[in-house]
Length: 114
Image 1 (cartoon, rainbow, N blue to C red):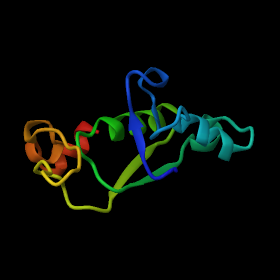
Image 2 (image 1 turned 90 degrees about the vertical axis):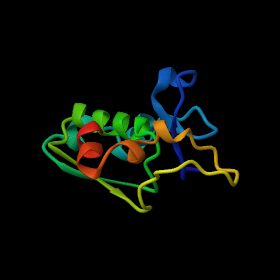
Image 3 (image 1 turned 180 degrees about the horizontal axis):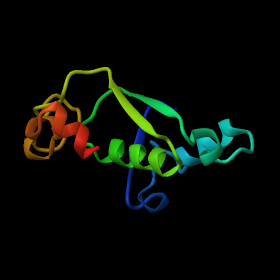
Image 4 (image 1 turned 45 degrees about the horizontal axis):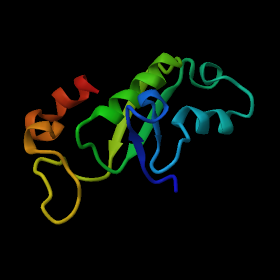
């Protein structure tokens, strides 16, 4: 159930949440925190985020911003798949090529964007 984080403007005001639920990423972090605030946990820390892919970059950007706002001094992204530079015509719902982050930007530009 927790394998996909999505950002939908109609769900939870556009906050990143677990696909198919109304559970926000912030809520999951609060559960793991055991009563400590996000700022208490993340302040001054270097954080590594592992994700399967970056498509448009919108969800990654929101997650990185949330971590920075909570006090993380560094946020490092680790993506397990190669950059998505073309749409999939075999059933995976991907946007047109012009909206794919890796199709329009190199890795350094992608890092600055997110």
